[in-house]
Image (cartoon, rainbow, N blue to C red):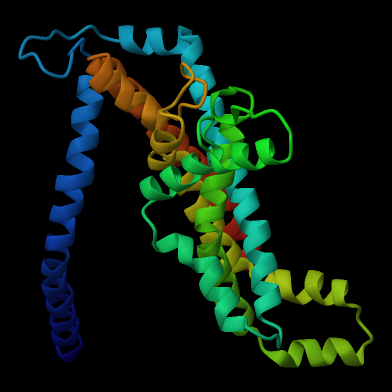
Length: 298
């Protein structure tokens, strides 16, 4: 009887705790689940985004999407922004963290300078770099003219401007990767390195066999955050190139924006949104699964 009473009290405590989840569940349902389901519904229609009249057209929008050459261009750009920025942010961020983990002068100043772009709005950051790369009156072309060289219009070059966007995104958010890696490095016990020194390990061996394995949780956090942020990149593209010329630098986010507001094609925009969600989910979950297994092995 006493054991049953204890189980009943424990069950009542657990049941009462479920009520505390309701506010969070409401927020997630209202701002994430409902908009996604509504967007999924709209993707089966020919709605223009404004009219009250529309009809369901089945899978026509999806057939249109997979036969649209612009879709694959935009997907390629999205993957470039997501995966390319992730690789650069993690390599550069880890380099900064390793440097700042040493006893160097101006450590706090360097950390502040590297992290400072993070607190600036991505839209504003895009405009800052726009005035550097702009053809008319841009700082880069002013320097080239001063050196006696011809000005260049990099933002209108479809072969280059996606990489400029990737660079600006990396520059802005590398500070986040740096801080996470720095926290991970400072949590590693110095005893491991002292033991490695006794064994005569080289700096590379210590980095490979001690630092990287013990940084696995920080690597997981950084890569997943960077992938999600890069794949849904929007603000920087709008302020730097507006997605142009044509659709040359569009991401799935900016392409949806253009389809909905400029072309009044909400049904097709919702279809692109569904594609973006599945790309983000697949890539982030695969990365999380692989990296979490690496953590267990470490």
